[in-house]
Length: 349
Image (cartoon, rainbow, N blue to C red; front, top):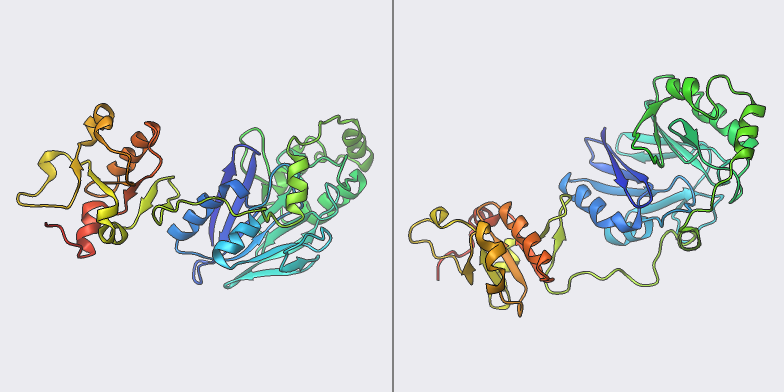
């Protein structure tokens, strides 16, 4: 199994990628709309095929990225049937299986935070993705959006804490930097339901909580009832086929740059001694990376700027320098001069 845990700092949301190693098919759990570029970059770099975008419940603190991921990849959207959200391809109920390659996630209904809360459990019961039903040393609130503390008590005990003690718990959120727990830990130490807490203990604790409504609820809930479909598609660069890497680098393939040289400004940021004698790469200018900060005014802004170096690493820093200086249409040439030559592109005038 290929597994990645990702984090959105704005909403403290965890997003999970779970993939089958052989088929490369992947499921993404609780994607965040604003993190779509990041998620797509990771899927592309790991050579995965996205099969399903699934949510654990109808979120009140962020907008799901499910719809935009479907638009970009053709994956299917899955969510609880009880939510009744639009644009859902597979409406999940208790006992369903989400299959990807030779693996699957078991669907367990765990209402109480909301009616449509689901927990996803790997086929070997080694991992459980609990959304907001069970958090690390806590649980989801039960005071709004169909919440019910009695129902949540049953959900957690019957569907999550009944899993093997070694089963790892991966929650939908954490606000204190905690990333993973286990059934055994939560049974012992969970502040609300652990340590042999009774139903009365739990309901009393939850009833005494006084929490403000999530600050993004008025935006998030309506958007999530359409699976995150926006009123219009987010703007993308129209001046070049830019791809953003998982590292956050804006790149353009060397073949496109070579075909559009008259329409771009190709900036070589290598050091002078790196250039091979007699090499005549069709660059518009050469400014070593170490000098770019002081010479940035020499770079014109009438064309998109493509920064290039030996391997595509230092040119990524050049992009950052130029963007900080106010240049908007700027990207790194993927693979640098090495990639340029590997593609058999012309290097002489």
